[in-house]
Length: 176
Image 1 (tube, rainbow, N blue to C red):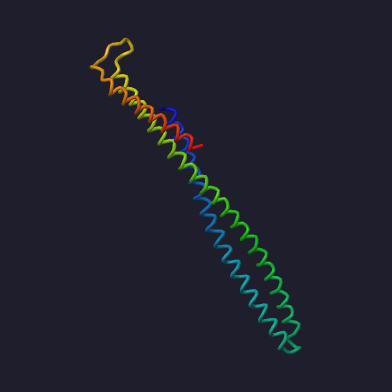
Image 2: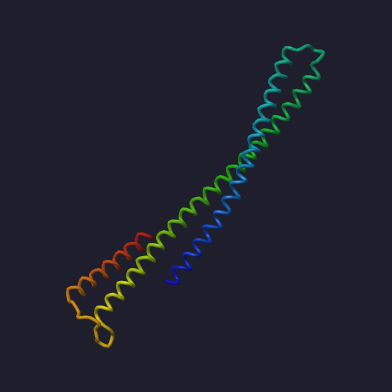
C-alpha cells in the first residue's frame, strides 16, 4: 500500500505545481488582455484621426495643406505602429491561452489518473481484506482452523476473490 501513497503524493505535487503555473498564466493573461484592449483602442483612435485628416485634406484649403499632410503622415505612422503592436500582443495572448489549455489538459489527465489510482488502491485493500478473511476461515498454514470450515462459504469467498481480481484487471486494462 505504501507504493500507492507515494504515487498519489507525486500526483498531488504535480497537480499543485501545475495549478500554481496556471494561476501565474492567468495573471499574465489578464495583463496582456488589458494591453491588447488599450492597443486596439489606440489603433482605433489613430485610424479615426487619419480618416478625419484625410477628409480635411480633400476639403481643406491649400494654406493648411502642408500642416494637414504632416499630421496625416504622423497619424498614418502611428496607426501602423499601434497595428503592429496590437498584432504582437494578440499573438502573445494566443500563446498564453495555448499554454493554459495545455495545463488544463494535463491537470485533467492527472486528476483522472489520481482517481484511477485511488480506485485501484481501494480494490487492492478489499482484495487483501478478503484474503485475510479466507485465510481466517480456512485455518492457519499448519492446518488448524479457528472455526468449523464451511465448504459452501469457502467456495463463495473464493468466487468473490476471483471477481475482485477480475474487476481489478479490467480496471487496469481500461486505464491503459
